[in-house]
Image 1 (cartoon, helix red, strand yellow):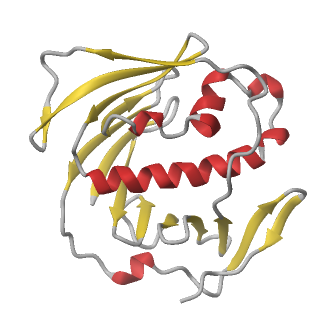
Image 2 (image 1 turned 60 degrees about the vertical axis):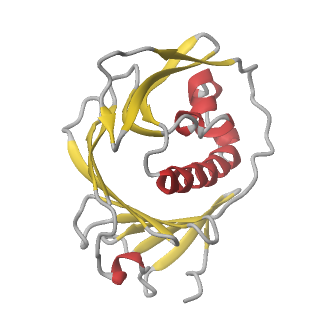
Length: 216
């Protein structure tokens, strides 16, 4: 179980939680009754649950087959930090990521920390990238910046390449900090179940289309 504090630009900071098992990732705010996002590691599918609407958005894996609408030149820089903290016996290292000369984001990453969590997050971001690529033609060109194209579609895992981030921040002021983590936490199995009576849908080429819940 990992607990984060998130500082979204222009909004109130909040706590979030990530639960990781061999089969699932669950993203939520720590309250079982609230909305949540479940990533099935076996079929690499994302399920976003909205209790108020009684719906589940299904995002299946798909390859990124589109080409960038603009040339992308990616870069990164490692910055030495003598006072960087140790986390779980490993030293955090500062990395900055660029696209076409623009600063896209920074992380303090810890190599070797919770390696299976990092592996699961990489798979999750690849599934998200497939959906973002499928929707790219719906996004105005003016909003397709070099950083957004890199981070969402064409290099979605690069901020995880060097280890698990314990701090992430963006030029717009967004920030996310790992507050705590615990191994071998006992949680109810119901947290990893999807509501069968809800309406399941996916994003098709021309809008929303019906989808099916996963087999038990």
